[in-house]
Image 1 (cartoon, rainbow, N blue to C red):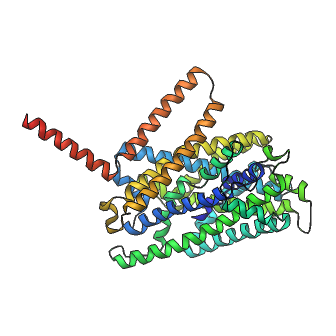
Image 2: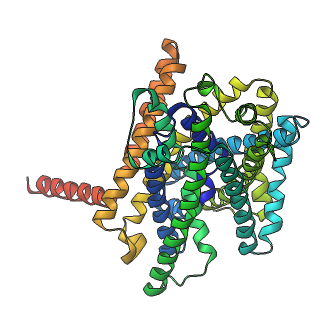
Image 3: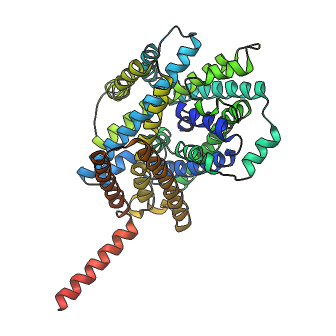
Amino acid sequence: MSIAFLDPGNLEGDLQSGAIAGYSLLWLLMWATIMGLLIQLLSARLGVATGRHLAELCRDEYPNWARYLLWFMAELALIGADIQEVIGSAIAIKILSNGFLPLWAGVLITAIDCFIFLFLENYGVRKLEAVFAILIATMAISFAWMFGETKPNGKELLIGVLVPKLSSRTIRQAVGVVGCVIMPHNVFLHSALVQSRKVDVSKKGRVQEALNYYSIESTIALLISFMINLFVTTVFAKGFYGSAKADSIGLVNAGQYLQEKYGGGLFPILYIWGIGLLAAGQSSTITGTYAGQFIMGGFLNLRLKKWMRALITRSFAIVPTIIVALVFDTSESALDVLNEWLNVLQSVQIPFALIPLLCLVSKESVMGTFKIGSTLKTAAWTVAALVIVINGYLLLDFVSAEVNGVFTGALVCIVVIAYLVFIIYLILRVDTVSTWYTQMRSKSWSTNIGN
């Protein structure tokens, strides 16, 4: 679950935040991680209390047209995330091969993780978890090494974490920091991951015990992910904040900039960065394959063999990624623009994971005694609203800069209206609103009959 907080897209957000905003957005990184933890705990709660994952419950909750639309949106978000993750791995492979392997070759190598995943899963979920632990440890060691090499200012770091600070110049980076935290496919994934442990849902005490342990586990996992993100942000804050390169730095050229700034040393920082990026890319692409199987199987109720399901979900991402790698391999700026488009694509999908989750965990008919109370519900909907509004700002900012022409503008308006109507429809399925609507209709019918 914590891998979604450490994928190459997040690392790029970290390094750009550090280079452009310095230490000033570390407080936001911390609070964004806490918000992400709340959403993930709700996802785990849903999976443990019901014995089913979010995609399966959405299949039963919504009519066919809404279910297929939600599935399409989830797949679209997963493909966008996968392209970023695979490209991140391919960039790392290019760095570690000293430029010998082009991006498209790195994409093909990364595609093999699908079969590695299938091989490991046959030996049980513990083996798969051990591999993820090794990859996260690799990231932690690599980026901690970089942190030690660059020696960021401890006082400024502490002030950055504890003192909220925001300026007009750093607003876009702030939006990016929050926007990267909630990954739509990860919301679906966590509700399925918790079912790797057998919990008797008919026994309240056993369910509560499981929820307590998952809360501890998730908190520790996200604390580690926060520290890794902190390392990356502070390294680039120390090295590039206020420099001429700050605005041009991205995932593609970050390693080279580090090498020019800090030189070789005992072990060149370029390769340390490459190893950490490779671990992030490989772990997140395996996570994407895992999530894709649950999303497709849950929404469509498919009963395919594991290798077939994994092959289909992997192909959805690998085919467009190879095309992207071939087209954009020679242009760093083009890859950065593509990454912005992919961030927007995932931002658009966030409501279609968050709203169904919050609706379902609030329903007694689904959760029984484990439905969330009014305080937690208010906190969860506030976080969801905040994340959706922030990502809406990112979308508006991007569209206003990229969309030109009357026809294109009109088309975008139509799409936005349809988008908002679907979001409103999803919200109106919350129990409280549905009950109010039924009561109002009943009163109306009674009045008409009396007349």
